[in-house]
Image 1 (tube, rainbow, N blue to C red):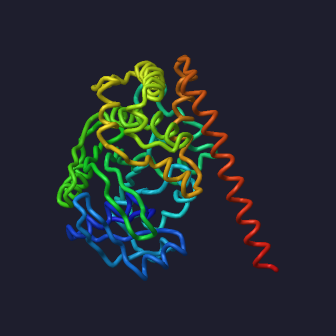
Image 2 (cartoon, helix red, strand yellow):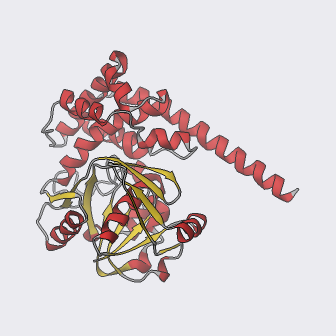
Image 3 (cartoon, rainbow, N blue to C red):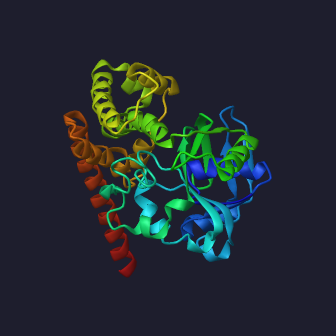
Length: 339
């Protein structure tokens, strides 16, 4: 298969390297500076067992140089999707499928939903409607990615744990394109299966992410620290209870208990969540996909979510400070250049 990744970060790098080693034709679209670095050094993966593999990456900052693809994988942060959606058109043929890997709930949640909220737009995920305007719902394959990985430096990815990917069509049908992509992932050494209710799977992962990610960002604690401290564990439980009620009101039933979901996070060990990694790297936080969307659905379904709201408010303030500092540093750098 011809597979393009919009983003050569932790998840894109992990998947891309493994798929290339399984003889699929892989390329990457990324920012100019990162493109130059990866073109020079290649992409390197440190596996869970410590083994190292490396590929020479076909990468560009111009989509029109990469050609038409069978699959385009959106492996960027949710807050970068608006920009990426406007850039990937040259990669799309009539049959090209688009797979989104973002944390939290996806912008397409109510597309082909079939329920009373069918077609409803989650405003905080696509406030200007740019993603929806550039990516047809017919192209989308839903995907929930469970591996944990981190970027040690540009082009060097460390796989922490996990190998599961759940795939599904938005309308719950079973399709050849989902089967083909699941087969490609399995050939690459992952575990992938096609399911009929991809939204329920998104909720299952988001259930933990909406609590562990922001708490880690605020406290700088790892997942096991949060799960084993009695106060933060209790906060996680309260946030998850609120989210469960929202999901239930949308017809979603979780197949795990809150305790089992927390235990699963604890078992990951001393792993820094993606949001904590973003804090440490001075990057914008995926706050709307992980929390804002949940609160928007709380309003939609008439559920009170005071614990989620409080943690969201604190994390939002943290994100504002990060962005202000980043802008200040950019301004200082520009002034020094002019001088």
